[in-house]
Structures are given as C-alpha cells and as structure tokens.
View 1 (cartoon, helix red, strand yellow):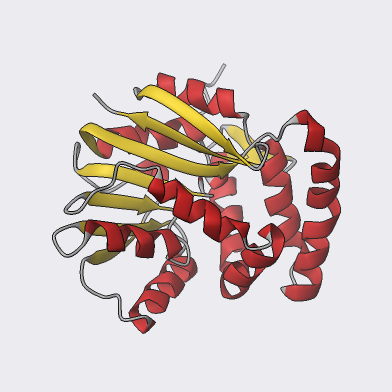
View 2: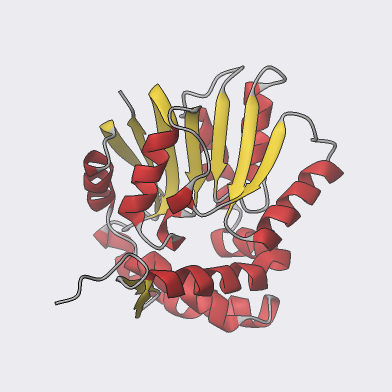
Amino acid sequence: MKELNNKDKLTNFGFKKVSEKEKVSLVNNVFSSVTKNYDLMNDLMSFGLHRVWKKYFLHCSNIRSGDKVLDLASGTGDITKLVHKIVGESGQVISCDINYEMLSFGRDNLIDQGIINGINYIQSDALKLPFQNNYFDHVTMAFGLRNTANISRALESIHRVIKPGGSVQILEFSKPEEIIQKPYDVFLDNFIPTLGKYVANDKDSYKYLAESIKMHPSQKEIIKQMDDSGFVNNVYNNLLFGVASIHRGYKI
C-alpha cells in the first residue's frame, strides 16, 4: 500500500475532510476574503472580548524588554503591536502570517499608527518556518492554530525555532464547559454565519470559521500534542468558561 505524503493526508476544513495541501489553499482563500472586515467582525462576534483576552494573553507571558519574538498568524497586527510595546527598541518582533492580504493589512495598519521600527514582516506557513534553530525567545499565536493544516507539525516547527528556556504561548478557541455548551453551539451555528452574511457579505467564510472552532481539539488534547512536540511544563487556563484558552509551554 502506498504511504500518503503530508500533502495527501486528510485533515479538517470545518466539517469537511480535505488534504493538507487543499486546506492550506482553502484557508488562504477564506482569510483573503475576510481581511477588510476582520477586526470589525471579531469585535461583533466576541462583543469586544477578544481585545481583553489578547491583552491578558500577553500579561500572562514571559516576554520582556529586549526579547526576540515571533508572532505567528499575526493577521491585522494587534498582538504584534502589543508585543512590540513590551520588547521596546532593544527587542525584535517578526510578524508572520501565511496569508499575504492579512500580513499586508497588518503592516499597513501599524505603519499608519507610526509603528515602524523593530518589526519585520514575513509571509510563511507555520509548518515551514524559514528561521534557524533556537532563534526566538518566545513565540505567540492567537486564533491561528486551528487553521493550520497539521497542528502537531506546526507545534514541532515552533519548537524548533525557540531558544532553550524560551516559551510558546497560544490563544485559541476551545471546548467550553458543559453549562454553556448548548447556547454556545446555537451561537456558532446560527449567529456567526448570519453576522458574516449581513455585515461582511460572506456567510461561507464565517460558516467555516464557526465549524473550525467546533472541530478544534480540546484543551487536554492540545496539551498532549505540545508534550509530543517536545515542549515541557505545558499548562492551559480557560477564558469565559472555556470558550477560549491560553496554552503555554517551554523548551529546554
């Protein structure tokens, strides 16, 4: 029997099964489509909570002045901006996204705010990071892990580029506690696609985003994959009854 290569292996694109290669293309199309309305839709879908979560996400990090940080799935640049403020002029931030439109939008957004020095912008797949081993003090990733073609391989790639003693910190939608599961499912199945239809004129993209949240592995499953990828002292803490969670691990 012929062994499947990585491009042929099946993964989830929402509720559909597609090859890893196909998922990369499909996800790229989704984010090219949603770029212009991305921040507005995030505000509406989370009732502004995503901004609070992101600030708390970095408050919980070990990032310090002078650090070299990779912000993966950097999107419109909100995490990059916050990290840049922490590391200061003596540090370095690399804003990295697989999608050219999102990366360009984020770059232009920060430049318009006068944030220019100390940030480099790289278009790259998280599974194939173009950096040398042991390069970064820390890696951050907010709401991007579930969109990768292969979570385990993304974590292995991240582990490779972090210095010994450095950390990865991931903010992602997760499995909510049972007490809110039913109303949350209604919210994902109905509210988000409808909002996408009327606000962004793009129901299909937001239907995928809702489905991707439901298909994302549980908090404990992500911890297991972090363990298997070489990270140690892996922990998570839930936000809003587990609607989102912060995962953190270290490289030794």
